[in-house]
Image (cartoon, rainbow over all chains, first blue to last red; front, side):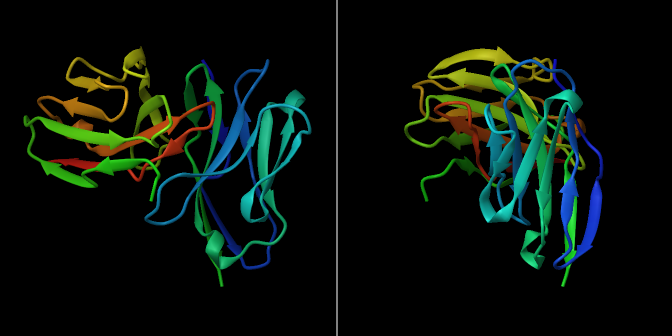
Length: 111
Length: 111
């Protein structure tokens, strides 16, 4: 079964700083990968997804992620964060019918 | 709002009581999922329905847990004889394809 590892549980950044959140999944083959975001008090929302093709995926709100098959990684990036990006970010991989999530990274952006 | 709807949003119960949660998926979605999320963890898969058929159950879903989707629309998750370890956020998601859309969840507190 798949497992997902997110490297940082808490990240604190100042506004305009660049963001990179690490995500590794356990084994290869064809993978469907996702980043979800949960803003305070809100439900999980899809940021972006990778199914196939261009390994650099662009999502909403200026986020992007790069799929590196050789490293089993799908890291999330944003060149310049805003205070409104304060949220919890979850990486997930599809495993059959279900999603397997990482433990999440709480991002706090200081204004 | 035509997203995934869950009711109630919060439930406080005493140990040993039974509780039932409801999920209304996005109307055209034939697939429905239940997940559980505890503090500091990502969502963990519980069970999956395609239309009214329950096709997959996690080992996390003990005998005290039962889920139904009688007409292939809304779903209920019942927990019998609740235990303090059942305290968690219970999330419902729905999909037509691979991408799952999540509700806001039901937070269960077992005293």
